[in-house]
Every structure is written in C-alpha cells, then in structure tokens.
Image (cartoon, rainbow, N blue to C red; front, side):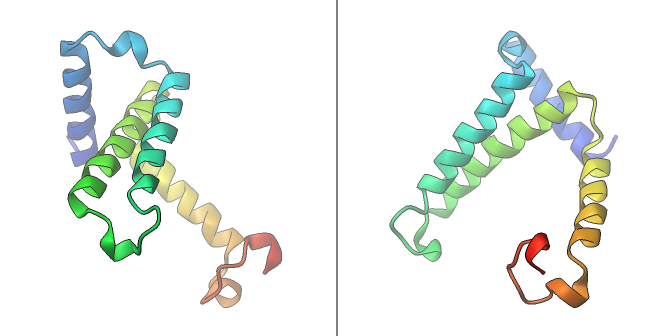
Length: 109
C-alpha cells in the first residue's frame, strides 16, 4: 500500500466511523475544497506570508488535501498518476525555453 493509499484509507475510516459518507458526494467534496482553500487564504490576508501562523496553515492545508484525496477516491482516480499526467501536460504548455523565469500564462509565452 502506498503512502497515499494509506492516507485515503485512514480518511475513509474516520469518515465511515462517523457515518459521514452520505455527505461526501463529489459536489460537496469540491465545495469543501473551495471553502477550506478560502480558510487557508484568510490566514495570509493583510499580512506578509512569513507572518502567517504556520500551525494554522498546516491545519487548513490538511483539510484541503484531505477533501481533495476523498474526491479523487470518489472518482476512482490514481492521485499519483493524475499529478504526473498534469505535470506532463504543463510541461508541454510551458516549455522551459519559453517559461523559465516568467509567470506569464501559456497563451502569452
């Protein structure tokens, strides 16, 4: 069992012990990701990045990642593979010789 599979299994165990799967449909998991990402962003509001509370960042990031992993599991997606596939696609959209050192979007390179 990979680390990711182990984490997903623990998330599902936690969820199932509380009978929360009924609330974990794809739409609500996607909404939860967005809400938790907003809570993560709020930690940086009106301050320099280094002034954000690292413990709170850790907690909110864990929430975002947890819901993302549960959403991937709901669709039967292999997290490692979808990330590698996206990296490959982004490599094609952002070739090093054009994208290195710039924050421009791929259609502006």
